[in-house]
Structures are given as C-alpha cells and as structure tokens.
Image (cartoon, rainbow, N blue to C red; front, side, top):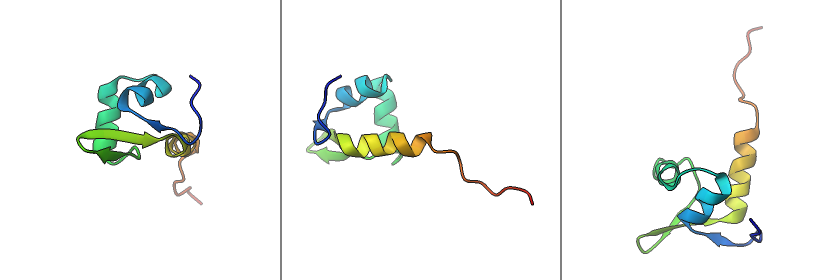
Amino acid sequence: MNISPDSILTVQDVADYLRVNQRTVYRLVVDGRLPGFKVGAAWRFKRVDIDAWIQAQSQPARGGEAT
C-alpha cells in the first residue's frame, strides 16, 4: 500500500493497512484505543497517527518487575 505519511485514511484504508476487518477498526476507534476523528458520520484517520499507534503497540509492556 503506497500511502503518503500526511494522508487521511478511511476505515477501509486503515483496515487494509493493518490487515484487519473493518469491524475491528470501528471497535478500536470507538473504544478510544485507535486514534481517529469524525467528519460528519464517517471516521477518518491520520496516517502519521496510525503509524505512531503501531509503534506504541510494538513496545514491550512496562509493568512493575519484582525486585
């Protein structure tokens, strides 16, 4: 998928980019777990925000280690 970093994506674009179902994208954005914004009734996403979200998901969980 050749999308410029400053692109605005649709739900279908994000689903294709993440290789998930559109319902998964809707669930994540409605739950506040995926960054997005509404234009009228339609969800839109900044490509840079999605890339940052992917990077954050790739980070190891920071939990308290037993000492």
